[in-house]
Length: 516
Image 1: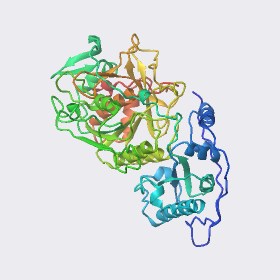
Image 2: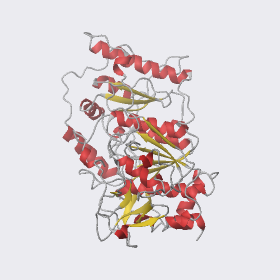
Image 3: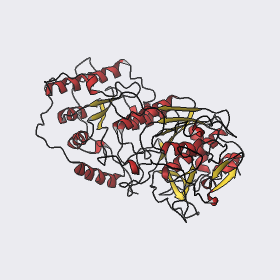
Image 4: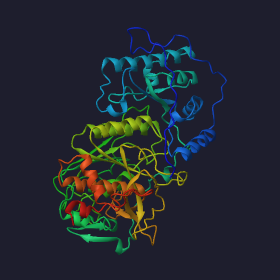
């Protein structure tokens, strides 16, 4: 994988009036008139993005010119996300969890930006009076210093992009493909009635244990604890309807899984003009599988037990599928990260979702939760029809995330699973696929019934590793994130020599928990 470096955009400073340190001092003249300017096509934008991805192994909108940003916005829902800051603020990324955007200087910048956009929009479209409410489908953001607002003018975007108070301005809804590849995005999950006997063990009182628990020695760790007292937040497509899958409802506490909590909420809004989230129920199936890998009960009926079958689970529906490529999804993920970050009981956040395009708002959410002390695990990438060539995806490549991918069984040398991404940002791996048969992957819950479902890829590796981290953390809930991470690393395949594709390798959770 090529070494990454950041391409910085040169920002032009504007003059400020005396005694008004945070006043934008925007002149009242219209923004530049670009009437007749032709927008770039999706193919042209994608070609530019792919070149940057090949060169830098990541893509941020600051890497491209304002014409490209404007064109991408017109090809989506025209909602721009603006990250803002007062002029005297420094190192905002490191302090996102401490910032109060209701303070005077933050409110002033936010209000002046919104007022300028509204006034300039009305100047350019005098036939109808537009209000801030008309342009802001999600309303005011309460925690993160971001504004989600509709902008269709190239001139407005250009002027805002050159302000020192604007940390970033980028299209929220642009996607590499015109229609999201839902069939390639981790949905359509069903149970598998033909699972080979070698792929599970029957365990008390009446559950199954997936074969992929064997290499990390989960059974050995269970001799010490099963994750009790640790809360894992799963940010995904939701958790199953408890009526259809009671293992994530009335039977969450059953068998050897007792005294724990399941909290289910939703931040994803399927249509931004609807205003309210859709709720916590998984309408895809992916979140159901991930919740099962982490926390399914060790109960009855032959369903597979989760790695940390006694941990608490906070399930947040933040997306419709595994690709974070819509305005509502980016907003949903950021909101979910804030919720998990502010939940004092949450230790671990598991995110088996991502995209090849970055999002400033999601980055802000990740940094907010990280600043609150959460361990954030993110999938390195599971190939769709257009990302099979690519390395570690967003947000897993962020320094605040632990990137995880999946490998096949059979020992060294490690071979990544067929759909898994790898690269220098990967920190840990988990066995997800049989080397002799690609269709034999990890066992987990199906959206309904007791027949287990199969799931593989870096998504499953991430959820499995989140369960492993919970087992390690449960040995002493007072541990810090850094202490738990150190134990994960010390008990991995290569604790002192990071592999270029697979990081520190497979975690021996049995040894990490028991010392044996």
